[in-house]
Length: 414
Image 1 (cartoon, helix red, strand yellow):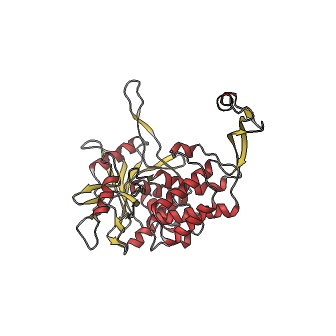
Image 2 (cartoon, one colour):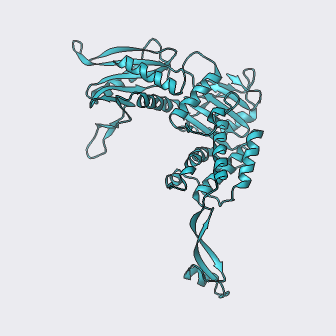
Image 3 (spheres, helix red, strand yellow):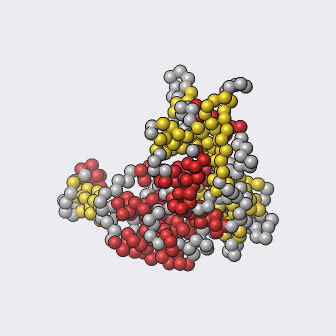
């Protein structure tokens, strides 16, 4: 475990623990209380509570609770090099779209001394600075106002209620063309949210300047459906990267409604999902002669008129309209190519529901290798299809790493 010089910053690997009274550096009572308050016992995925501490799960990323920042990194081998694993994680996130590959100044971001949170916040402020530099767009919106001149649609009901004494006024609805609209409301709220969680000096000054330059907006209640309503046109398409980053910030922000001192921003990602998407994107990008799809559903079991249960293998590889292989990714260490019985049974089911295609479990590891096995139907009969295990070394998450991973997979498959 790496502990930064700042007593409020910790870097750990997945499945490691932080304690109140253990180690060179330790959690303070205030740190532990803040983590305990944020913890939700039912289906809380990020960490579990242990005696005088917390134990992290398979989620990676960063949790910012008040002044406390904890970065959780993945780990698939014996290496304890935090900088290496941080770089791998960031490149994997970028390759699957969690960081924009074309993000301005990405190559200049300060990897060694920055947390995942600070990288996100720097990407966001870069996008905001670009938007302001190019000029913020205006849109039409409806506005209800009391005026001395009748210019717009008269709202008769409200006119009678509000202006029965002052009949010289007109309560009207009119179209206004200005910079107050949903895109700016979301971006402004993201700016204000970031200012609440605390920043280092360089980022703080940039956020303060952009916030001052940005037109003040009315508040908006944040829901995921609000972002789904957005439609980009020729004028607003340049807002999409900034809005995507604002969405991540706003949907993962948990305000402290009681004291206002322990706001939480949890940018945490399931490493199982990251690994699955990374393998899928790598095969799609560099296996051009194959058709590679993910999460294809098949009906598995049904009862009466109820909806059928489905199965969805992680990755299906086809060539010439024939299923070549079915892959199921697992982000966990495997020893001596010995998968669990449950994983093998799941793999067998995927094979049977995909034309008895060859099927493989795909794990991360210290070196790349693979084995082929066979499914036994009875004591004396063996299926023609095979089931196997592929272990892939995660060198890096860049294009070179993706290309190597793709080549290794197809070498083992064929």
